[in-house]
Image 1 (tube, rainbow, N blue to C red):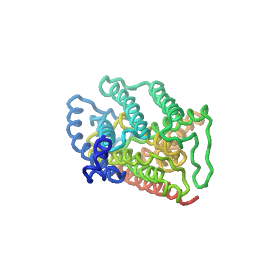
Image 2 (cartoon, one colour; image 1 turned 180 degrees about the vertical axis):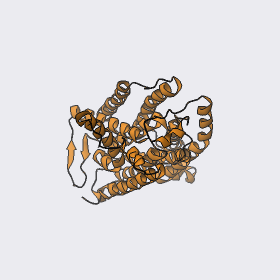
Image 3 (cartoon, rainbow, N blue to C red; image 1 turned 135 degrees about the vertical axis):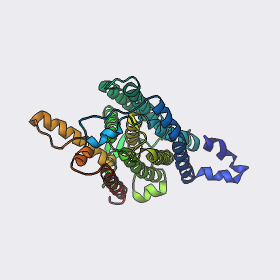
Image 4 (cartoon, helix red, strand yellow; image 1 turned 90 degrees about the vertical axis):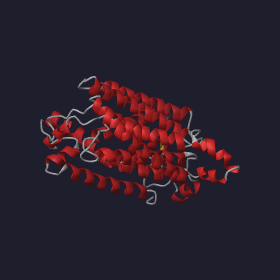
Length: 362
């Protein structure tokens, strides 16, 4: 909004030339998102407490979690506001990359909100029925895939994806396979982050690390000089996603202020489903779907631990882990919650660095 309003005035006021630079607007988006989170947080937490919008803690999990009973949930509203508002202020709203990301953010945020609303306010234990939640995620995948096919964000956008560690090798999807692929990426990443959101600060810290990596990927993908040097696909206009990612980083840091142990508020599905789907959508737009498995490796491990646990119990009647998802296994093994979170963050940082290094190891 500010970019479209103020940059055209550069001939009259040279200061507005700053709005030309993605780096300036990204920094501004980060700071704006951080302030929105810090200002909105206390008011929303008070409102959630007053309305008894609280989390129910499962009794079959680690007993140390029982003290969290009654902690306000649905704090993902803070995250969504702190992503959407700075993006509207600082990004180029004529850019389709940005528009598509806003659609994904609002769509998945709405699904998560409905789930939290039914559980926390209507006191329906299961919340939004699993098949309805999945239908909403798949519906987004279909719409997102069709938008990319019918109205690509740039003429150079095609239905391919990069293969890490190889130059000039791509997976080329026909449309009948591309849309199912989009559905799997968005649905899988959305649910993986949701499964990870079980400890104070765990999911928001890991997603913030991923957003830093995607901000770097978006910036180099949108610059012809960097993309030529690294021999990766160049997508004109994708650099604007750096501003969006920067807003997500600021939103994550701001929410972590209230979500760090002991948490004052939980993000709930409102935040978790949206953040996971956002990572999937960014990977699709930047042609980095395979790299999403690396940068989001902790989320992949968490989701796999649940799949393996359920499969093993059904097939053999035995459990592989003390409890799934994986973070609970380490808790029951004697690790303090904060130790699990920080160590998972460390792994997340290492995976992000490994992901960025793949651009040179080709």
